[in-house]
Length: 409
Length: 157
Image (cartoon, rainbow over all chains, first blue to last red; front, top):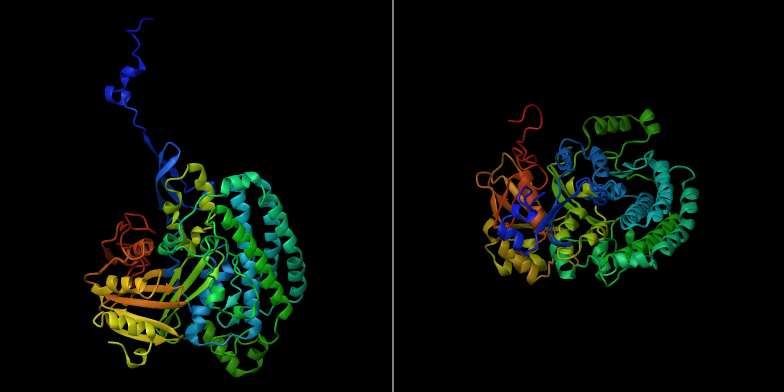
């Protein structure tokens, strides 16, 4: 064959392009089905070689109109929606919404309910951190941690099931207290779990904390300066890993958190490894809180003394006319909430979750806005990954611990 | 004009001292301070609050639709000062005929997505916003679902 019949490759490319040495930029679409994006986050990445030049997060794939839905539910029915916002920390959302509405109503919650709420919310934090640790480790390549984490998570879900009949969407906290009387035998169940738990955390730490691959993948990765994080609305363990000792449980205590003795772990490095250490230490602290709640659990009622809000006991309903009337009113039309507005913020496993509830004096909320911690945190992704290598994106976004249901609502 | 009971409140008094015209009204309800700010002054007030009173965090921006009242929309800002351990709510009334307000992204970059969300779901436009697109709904979506006159049943027109 002669050279004249087959054109050489160089001839098919225009002269100026073939000779230029300018590197080509490449766009990479990561997600929304990418397994390491934990849900339906989509990142539009612009790459120069392996370096990220530009990152544009795209959210909204999980938008379900929950805030609109609140407006057609009664206040009590709204609790069931809050589970579905952050499905890894349902009880934190239950609690925040209940606290907001109770503030509007001016309700006093009995100590037993408050302490049970604290105990279950801390178990939720353990549950959420365990899922985070397992999936984050699997992203980075440590397969076995996942199995250990889900073993303990299963125990926690069993405790939730014992309380509420549900493993994930518990809706166990109600406006005015708890949905049901705490079940018989719960102390033993929780004690068995919480006594063994610190040694389980040691197991995870043995697998990861001094693991050279783990350190190599996480140390010095995903740092953001503190001023930028505050400016962008980042909250939670990410701030604490960079040295800010701020936790709503301590700074503005709610639901009798001020009666518990616990530390706020902080680090100063602010990288993915520091976030890991902070969350692991938070698990130990949460275990401490659960233990204190278990030992000092007060007695008394599990619902507030507010017959116009809380459903009456079954027995009373059958013997007292007033109780029957209240029951009928609450079930058919709900209870009226005085006009006004409140913003209640609490510390969820991911950061500050806030409920802004506006009441116009009727039985349905006029407006409920949910400030999801993931929404604020996700904004900082471009700041975190631009200029770094693509392989670090997985470690960096995993360390944020976001839930897309929480950000998209 | 601040009501009498708020003249003693440090934050409320400081904002009024900064710009008396900016504060339309204020109230302290259930321990939460709310200041209603004139729409055109919002950026200046926010900058003052961040720089002088150390409200370094903007927790959230959202809207409330008081249809059929006018001015129809309320844009609500929740601020948080870590140093003072204090939260503050700012509100601006925005008319339905011209739902537009200055963006505070120049004060806190974090306002970006919160304002986009408010734009998406309420149709309130934020002037000088760097990237005012829909965030939750598809770009070709018609209408703004959190408005009270949004049709939720039957055919969407």
